[in-house]
Image (tube, rainbow, N blue to C red):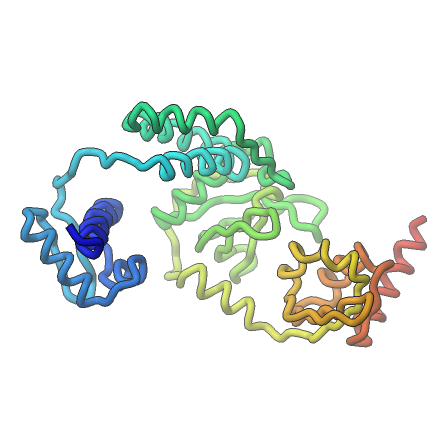
Length: 318
């Protein structure tokens, strides 16, 4: 059996698994995943059909497997089994207690179908892998916040929040229609339509004081999370250039992407960092102050003025 034949066999099996994992799978999804042409995808689908797999296809929609058709569990490779360990540790640290418990239950089911040596492989790794979260991601009194938000998005039902923003002393009550969730800068955020503000807002999960399922369905049709996130990124930006001590600049590499980093240029013992940032009033100047004793602002003048204001405010509080 030639190498190309083996690759095609592996791809066809993987396509079958993907078809079982979703209700509808588009041909373009398969082409993108396996980096093949649509023509190749169509040929592989015909091969599955010829082997007796009942595939339903609809032009412009995608492929699905006839309801009720299932294959026995597919055995996992050692590397796939090892990836479950990382997934389990991440779930324990980066999701709420409720989803973590569901994932733990699912992991027992997955481990039950592993072969003996794969089980030993997983057990050896589990005791030696630790992942710690840098921040508290959820209010400890809300063990099922993510689970409720997941349900809301899937079932298109509102959730009722008590939310404490930085600008308000007391939590405010609001009903929102969650569009999507994302993890960024060590925090979980939900983007949703807020009926209290009558606009789309982002809410950090650690600032939620209370959350509960609401009976009201969504009143609006929403786009995708990526569409709204792209719209947020299209707001006007300001060019910022700072000179940073070379020894200090290396420690900023993990954070700078969060502040609109564009490029860097070494200039002797300093590094010139260029940013296109959306906020030189609050976010960027406060970040700059964390390393400002080893840096110099080249431009803009407005940023220099804002940093001086923050330093005066800090000095007044000493």
